[in-house]
Length: 467
Image 1 (cartoon, rainbow, N blue to C red):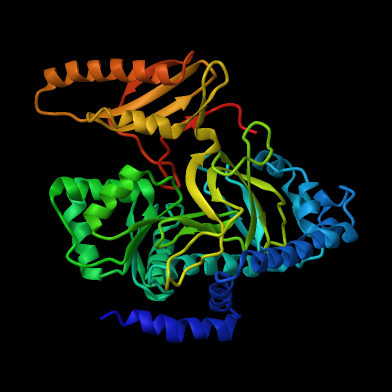
Image 2: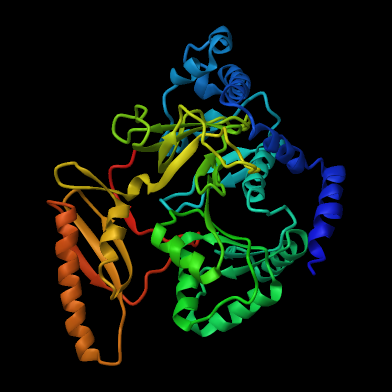
């Protein structure tokens, strides 16, 4: 029996609420109410929160004081007022981040955070507890759709905090285990030699769910599948986050772990923006953010069913508002004009808009010589026709040059491996150049492709042309 779960939920959380004013459970209860709102009620909630955010921004945030927006314009129609504000890219924000600080707010309450930096330099930004706790409440709301509560025991397959000292790392580990009821298996150390140890750890720990990077969980599932290993416990769900979860990855993860594998979508600098519900669709957290999908070239709204850049206005971050902030991710709306259908008797939303798909990173969009955009997912699908390719990573350096790094499966016959490798690389190069006309590929056979410092693994990376 898991004694930590009731202890955390009935002692630790109430103590934190009494001592520190923690409001996560309060905000979670609010979200469980608003998820049942009609579209009109949800729009009214956004209207009220956006009005407050914009009024404070044009008065006290230097970056927005000179746009000519007046309080009466905002009160009249905050959605129309928001559209008068130019989109904000990460590069623009980084050039003058201090300009986005709210001068009315007490800086002693600010919490410094930064993005993972998987696309370059990390983005440093400010939040406060009010913002952070709304982010956490949104995560637990999504988890609740799968029978998970804040005290539920979990195993994370994650990048360890490598910047910590040995003493700090041990303190971090204990805090996770005894205050959050979770342990971590390092995404950096997934090897066949330690597989039995990891599986035994999970079986002994008896988590309700597994949480981690899509590629790390998939790699773990691959190792288990190859070794013919299964868990002896029953999981409620595997939650994939931080990366695009491809269907072939989901299929293997579900088969190996014997439970649903679902998508959580969020960002450190925007919170949890969507969570996959039991209807297998990603419901957007519209109570916490205005989410727009924009054409990558024109920055105009895309039509329903078309992929666009995710542009976010965080409705809870008043200390450093970043209005119409482009995250660099791509997604597709299922429909923003009608509510999702839900299921009779379900306990998750039937009103929140639905993201039909999460389509990866902006810089995962590769560009053919004639300017045609080709999504990196196509490269992933193309690569699946080559069973000898264990891992790959494509870097597009310019509009006419690219490099493909490839890890190939080997056997005991080295001479046969050499011949097969040459044939595979030659055919793979031809397919890649056909997919991206006018782009010349250099092929590199490597022993390993490591994840970034954050623990994430990226299939395709375009090194030029980002806004």
